[in-house]
Length: 472
Ligand SMILES: [Fe+2]
Ligand SMILES: [Fe+2]
Image (cartoon, rainbow, N blue to C red; front, side, top):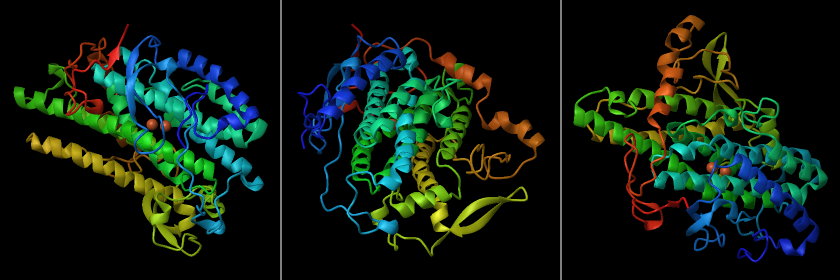
């Protein structure tokens, strides 16, 4: 179904046919806009930004480019095309038609999953709201804003489900989405990583590489949900999410590239004195964002995850492409666990290990980008390798919480940890240095801050010196 843009809320769910729902969402809309103006990108309401807007959810329509003032961005409700024959692919309801409404007994479970996912979307916009002031180029500024408006749209996607399928509870949850704020001591966002600050662009690129990628894996497993409207919402969100991870991977890559150039041109490792970010500091930021993102997958052994799967609420990554019985009642899975202060392998029922399995899929995906970064370093002839730290490093959730573990997986005493922490995680000094590089925004088309290389290509075939943002 094409997206109807004649409506106050663009949508492809025939919102006009349900007046009550339409009115409820039209009531929420001004509150969303107030939130955007208060908590979204700071001081940007008048900017014209070269943004991508979906006009339909098929391959031809979802990437239309043009200048938009962000408060006028057409946030709406876009679900992937419905497959009328879709069946639940796993668990006790395997083979049954996907649910077009919420089964009564799954109401609170589904609501909780939708609220938890939805809460992350506005959280990241809040975390990033000051970054525009220090953008390294117009190209990067535009990418930041694209990510921000799409996270806003992802909030719309979840709020639509809450309003349409969860009655009064859902409406209250939709209100609460705008009342919690990232880092707010009284009303924080639900998940830890979304209460961290994103104070600089190295953090932003690491966040979009690692934390948006957690989003990809959560969305992909919710795209397998038996609750079809949730599945269809998530499938369309995933097409948008891909760009966020591209921003992260290419952003980190361009910083690495610039660092390597500075090292080679000046025959020195002391990149900081040349206004670049040294590879060791980039590695520390990687360690931090990766470990914080690993926590988002939850406990290694989880009966909740088992129940979600058995009930048909949340599947595995690419569930239908996995060659097994999709019941997992007799299957087992090996996880890392902790016994007497040591990390040991442990075999657990596969159903209980679904969080860990998703985390494993995520880790393998993360490693692919690191490989590409390392190829750039190698090509520059520099002897340095970026590494993902061990999964037990710096964890706050799950079996490894409270354990002190080095990046290469050795369990440490508290004293050894204290003695080395500053080599592995960004120190206040590192953070202050990175922030010090990021003075005022670079706003001349085609110019880039000293610490980052220009992109290989512009957006939508435009040149790198295109005027991606007009300030007015
Ligand atoms: Fe998102
Ligand atoms: Fe995202």
